[in-house]
Image (cartoon, rainbow, N blue to C red; front, top):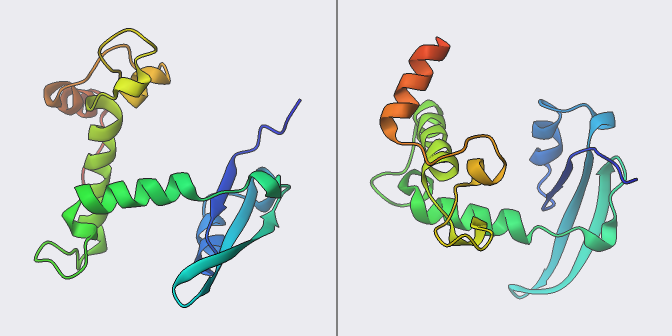
Length: 152
């Protein structure tokens, strides 16, 4: 039976291990880095490195997180540099990202998640967190029912 620890992969940015340690202990995760070796702007090789736990280095890739980051940059103008919408406040950026995450996971359907049933499912439906597509009324009612505060 394989490890049930979360697997985390990132590029070689030195800030990631410190940020990850804010949420995980080193014994609770498998974290590795994929460092791309570049020459004149082109990737000529990759170096894989274990940071915490035991990763299968051969399988360590960052393509999914890179694709997700690209999606975020294209859909959230606050993450795009040199625009009028660029976030100067980390609080406002965090709020915007939280709303986008809820929309992306509970509202937006993806045909790839339909399991051959025709119309798509949301990621939350695919993970069996909810059994239907949410709308904004349900989201706001859920927050008030749960008694969650919107102030920091």
